[in-house]
Image (cartoon, rainbow, N blue to C red; front, top):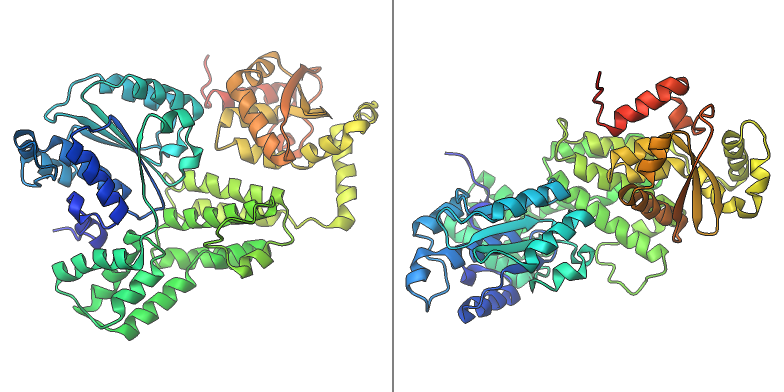
Amino acid sequence: MDYVTFYLKYRPAKVKELDLTDVRESLEKVLRSGKVSHAFLFSGPKGTGKTSAARILAKAVNCLRNRKKKSDFEPCNNCEICREISKGQALDLIEIDAASNRGIDDIRNLREKIKLSPAKCQYKVYIIDEVHMLTNEAFNALLKTLEEPPKHALFVLCTTQPEKLPKTIISRCTQVKFKKASQKEIMRSLKRAVKGEGLKPEKGVLEEIAKSADGSFRDAQKILDQLSSDGKKISLQETEKLLGRIEDLKPNKLLLFLADRKGKEALLEIDKIVSFDLNLDFYLQTILEKLRFILLEKTGISNLKDQDLEEELKEAFTDLNKGDIFRLITLFSQAALEIKVSPIQQLPLELVVVQWCEVKKDNPSTKKEEVKIEEKKANPLGNGESKKAKPNGNGLNVIVDRWEDLLTGVRPLNHSVEALLRASRPLKMEGQFLTLEVFYKFHKERLETEKCRSIVEEIASQIMETPVKLKCILGEKKKTPVMKTVDKETNGDNNDIMNIASQIFNGKLID
């Protein structure tokens, strides 16, 4: 029989077993009323039981015993439907990872299938995890379903970042907010596993685990699971030793190496993380949370609770500007997407280190010289364009200097847009308008579509730290894009159009 981790084995199976008091009371109130909403929004930190609560809700509304006995709201966990949901075998419970199924086509597919009646259950339940990852188009498609849902459909949207959801989506959901668990609530969760496994922890062991779990039931259970691998008895000394090692593996070390651009040390740290078999998804999420706090602090928002932002990190990132932090966030966000499908799990993380450390820290003594070099690249014929752009030259220089960051930023959003940008060049910046020179008509038409234009404007605005609007003009075909990243990938006019077209249309050539 396959081994089942404590977190899965002892996850709550009934409403009364939910360890967060507020969540338990909220769901009990909703289910007792008999007026169950067609859409719920479960929001809160990782590891606080959102998915477990969603499955309990799915069982409660479909339990065969509850259909007969209306006065009870708890799932029986014994009927055919409850057992199938518990085992993950229920056809009418559909769990979707929005990080991997974030496009409009995925939601359209959902909308088509939801019209079909449930196979066995009274309600067809859709649990959409990390729902904040959906694209704007996908949100609009989902909104239409939430506005006019079939009577047999129930949605549970789960997210760690509710602030990224459109207000129109939030307003159509019954909200249940999950917060970081207290030590008391975590110990309540741990005691289920202790009792079920017959463990004998010394006094103080559970308290120490609860303290180090940072409000996460999942993390606490994983620690207890690891401690129990050597036997039923768990000593306080052994616990403190393991917790010390776990503390040593927190993302701070990697971030400190990256702040100093110590590539070799950063790569060795990643190797150590992988050797301890840490969950890289959560590791990346923690990194992004810390970088978010650093970015917010640099923008002047200092009244936030710096829950995870230690003084050593604040000090290490002092010399980096908002653009640097934005680039790191972009690189790690891209890695978070790619790590789910990478054949070598740590490779996306290692690529972040290599890409980041290749760029040296800004050196004020060389900055002006670098700008001059980029201006020459942008105007190799010396035809006076630089002089025309001089009144707005600062904005143009920033875009030219950060062109690679712009390409990196649009890449995870749309690879076709990156390909289109590689076949163009920044020409001028007038007020909030960025003008790109594009060398082929169909490139210009694609960049001017709402979808492509909004992506470029979004990333350019983040780089410029002010709203940017995009304009495109058609240049002479004899000119080629000037950025060095494009030069490497193109060999003359004919190769350029073929290479870019190949990227835009997913590499499919039609005879």
